[in-house]
Length: 132
Image (cartoon, rainbow, N blue to C red):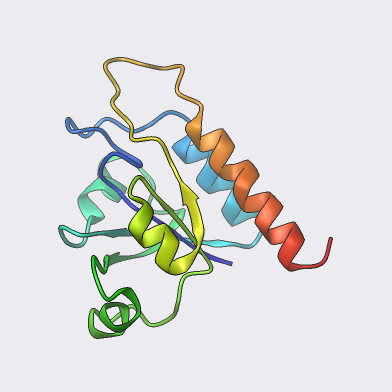
């Protein structure tokens, strides 16, 4: 599956700190044959990929459509429709399907487990989609 993650407050906090369990979740998804993509309404976010050493796990970065989602996706050059979206805003998840994650505000919180729930939601969706 092509899995698209929002960046701000989904993967990183305002200070750029990475949410706990991001790397492990991405690694599991890639190991299972999925492709991980990042997209953001504020532009390409390769700096987040590089800063956190995720280049080996992220297939590409795109600009996220914020309205008229399907038309904007095409206009913005996203070459295919996401199979599953993770975002802290419900509008994009409603448009494409996926999981609305609680916004990440680190405040030094190493106990955040939202990415583990994300993985479980993706695994359930994938199993259901494949008739398991």
